[in-house]
Length: 114
Length: 115
Image 1 (cartoon, chains in turn yellow, orange):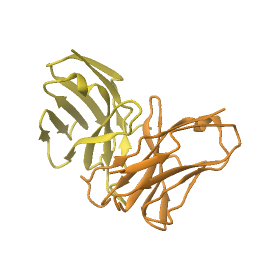
Image 2: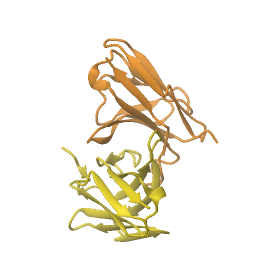
Image 3: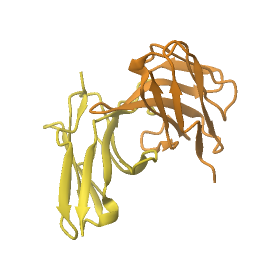
């Protein structure tokens, strides 16, 4: 049973516009959420994270929003650039024995057209 | 900076063969883990280690063994390869696994095909 879901397999956006990637989760014990970005033939790299006690975290062009009551988070990229084209994974952890144990979503392929 | 290094990058195995995927990190990270990535499934945790001599199972451990004799190395062993183990495998390391915001550093992956 997938505890973290990214229901949009792909997203296509024009350069300069906003990209919004969505993620839903079912486990109420998750208390930290992270976004990773992955280029072909490379490993994922960390992008941005948010604690469950916050509803927004911003880092440059990237903003993550968390709606705990809806168990939903989203990643906004403004403005989108062709170099942002990649697979984006939403991930979550719940502490327990280790915050290193990440639960990932299926990923969303973002394509930014020039 | 080497970061997390995985070898080999590609491997083809026959059903029933065994092999070891190598993972090494030079950042003195205490936590290391192995994930597999399959289409439509995201990354799933196979095994993890919170320090030398300590390992534990993740979400999909069956068919895999690990050991952690040093801080730097965390090899993943396939005991008897099956076609269901065809996947892309990623090794990751984390400096402080007790810090929820600490980022994971991933290797470039090993693409394994079992025929």
